[in-house]
Length: 331
Image (cartoon, rainbow, N blue to C red; front, top):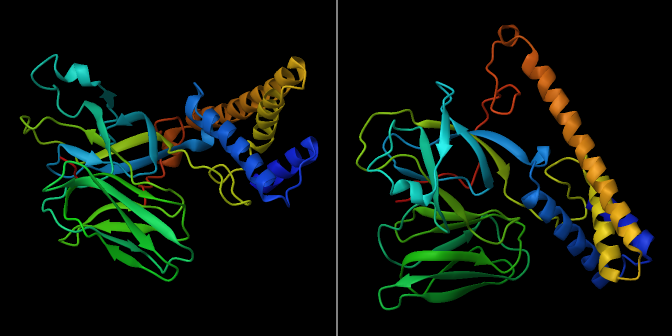
């Protein structure tokens, strides 16, 4: 199953016609609403949304912009010592003069449209990797020398690849596309440094800024962090889309969406709504239990037999680092 199969089953159930664009889009919206809520709000993350990666924070950087597909951070550790790197809040930073011992605590400082700071103000260039296939607008919001907040829209017609802003920006608070696109987008400053990127399947640039060391602390430390995280939420767009490459949850998504639609229509009994929701909950619990059993079997196997180290969530480390839309130093 994929999105196509989920909405086909729902259309048959509720007497809707997928040839009607409005009805098909309505079903896709309902599925996305349900899956987004499950992805973001479940106490136990859906297993296929979890990833591990190594993040290079640089030899001297105090802050790093994480890859844009990293969602909620669940755990960080030093891959050399396997020591946990603990999450701290804003308030904790002001409870003492410095973090000690170094490199054992971190905080998500902010979310930024930029992965690196703009060192020099100037026009911003937006470039797609290939000519666009349909019209799209790119909206830049930021600060210029004369205005605290300015918004400029760059218009891309079919066949266009690059556009440069009329304004000279000194900082950007938001970079957005009007729609998802076929190709990735790169944003560069006047020095031709890539300051942000937007994957084709997203509509905005957004990076988590991770602070790992205070400026006053000059103690030498490792450059690598191992991060266990949820992937950032990615809505279904194309009919063949699946939930991060797996169809394991599709039946649960069907029942959860059915529950939402029954509840929205208001002409169904409360029992039908609850029954559908319970079906979804039971299926999700079964998938989680199966995944946990598989991880336990791997974790309990002799490490020496494989010559590898256990990972954060009990599997074995493949040492695959993150791709694309990369990291940067954001001060």
